[in-house]
Image 1 (cartoon, rainbow, N blue to C red):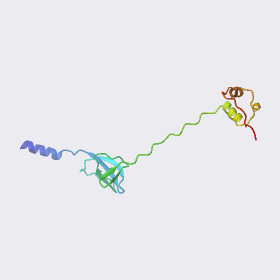
Image 2 (tube, helix red, strand yellow):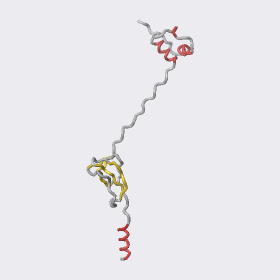
Image 3 (cartoon, rainbow, N blue to C red):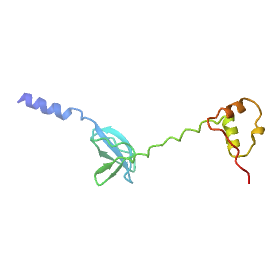
Image 4 (cartoon, rainbow, N blue to C red):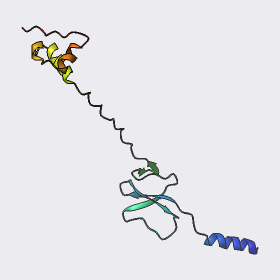
Length: 129
C-alpha cells in the first residue's frame, strides 16, 4: 500500500510534458508555435488562442473547424532564359551583306572580310528594287 501511495504522489507532482501548441489569432491564422504543458500559468498573447497541435502546423497555417491547413506553397520561380550568344563582327557583316544593306566593297579588307569569305554559303547581296 505504501508503494502505491508513493507512486500516486510521484505522479501527482511530476512535471507535465510540454507539447506543441499553435498560437492562433482571431482570423484563424497560426502566428506562432510554442511548447506548453497545457496546465501551467502561461497565457497566450491577448487576441490569440493556444490550440493543441500534435502534428505541429507551421506558422502561416490557418485553423478553422478544428483543422489546421498548411500555408499555400509559392509557385516555383522559373529562371530567365540565358542571354543570346554574342554576335561577332563577321556575323554582323554577313547579315548586312545578306540583306543587301552593304555591298561587298563596303567591307574593309580585314579579319571581318576573311571571316565573311570563309562562310560555307556565299553571301549574295539581295536585289534592290
